[in-house]
Image (tube, rainbow over all chains, first blue to last red; front, side):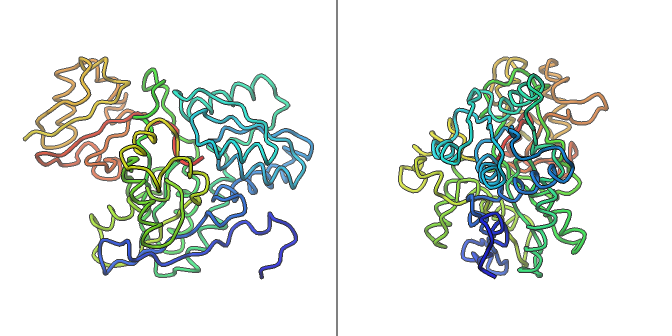
Length: 313
Length: 93
């Protein structure tokens, strides 16, 4: 079915592509799920739609309301798309050091953007959104980090799509942010194929957030549960950008920086723990929003240096 | 048997300002014992009230999170890198 009533119906059912040429072991196959093919350009379209639908069902929001959310970009863009179609206003709290394309996209979709301090990272955006929400209760705060609709979108959508398209899956690997993708897909896969391993890849965010005063400022997303994971690996900017370049140069896949990180993390897991089998890697978005990063064009050291200051995840 | 421990910015004040410390130890737990003996101010940042790892600290051996290996019993080899990082929100949000 390729004819739809509106753009929101095109969310999900993203393609899966064989990228085994990137596998460090010829007996381990790799497949990439291309979430950048969603209409807002990322996997976050799924959770944006699900969070709004469930809040509407529960009577927590109604058209005309203003939705508030901290986002480094992708969830904001997904919400902006949903808000436009469903008749909501949207205010996004965006860390000021994200790539300029993300802010541009939010603004052309009609979202109001409020910047939070770069040195506080995503923690700072969350804190600011919590404060605004407490001070001005007319805002409808969806809070992707703690909203069960976030993992549910992946439990009901992404997970079943992956098992349908790759029933031979042994390992699922994805980036860790809110943890919604890993929790939702991970639970679905483990319920239906208990031997599947779930591997998280994360940026070294704690190295980059300069404004942290002490460990008690730390943050673990309320929806996160370590029980779902079998491994967790750091991908630094250099490895992430190298992965992004390999996707383009060896597979013709134009994907974002966190996609490169996911490929790097999958490769590490394959080298460390697998002699044969099949790995599915989720690529959260396309490369479009990162052209200004120079990820494909500039000298690697220059891009890495920039990535230590600008949030490309 | 020495390993290299990377101290995050937020904890350097408790470690004489050092970013990287060479410590002996067969497991992460033993390395932490050495670190805490040298720098007692690190203890409340590394170890939680229950004697396990502090909730908001992540520890990686060669970039793999030890919570999904053998936690504080994770074995180390000479030349390994132990990276300590605070848990903060991150990722493609």
